Length: 232
Image (cartoon, rainbow, N blue to C red; front, side):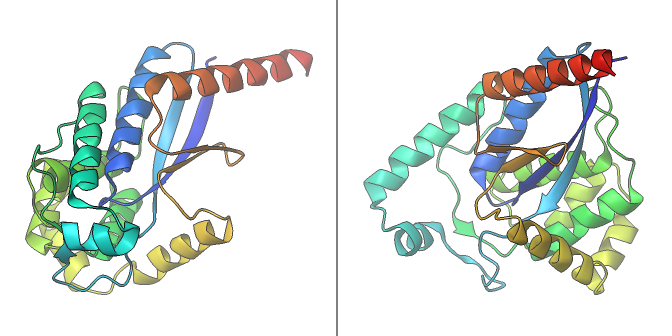
């Protein structure tokens, strides 16, 4: 029987490296099909938890946060676009216009985990994973706001989730406490940057790594598990 791993993917929908990291992880899992499988669970992390409802101009935000110049931002944007293309994800060449608060997106992702179809591995992505990918596309490919309830409902529908129930969740306070608790849980485990990919609650892979990194680590972990099983 092939090993099945639990992967907690700690990330934010406004993080371009998270979209790249997810694409890389999925490619690695496809390459390892038949050797191992995994169940992906998305965990909340807010890069800008104090961001206002209208967001902020992205150039202004990056300058304030990192001190980067327009030229540096353009170079980084092109690098991200190329890295995304390598894993099959399309970033708009002009990049993002604004950055937004993503708390409601995390509430909807939590709902998708609780009420949606669970992740079934490489060949059967769960609705939480489909929603996550739809949110990445909405923001990074289409330039839409992940703070907009209309955008969030559209993403839920794209993931095969019920639109009316999505609106109900967003218009209420559902899952506020649960999302806050999970955010605090990962902060207490010293996760301060994303993506942070935690395999079987013991192995951390940080950043938007290329597929080869995930492939190598997962294969090694699978070999160790088989060896431990044969020694039992």
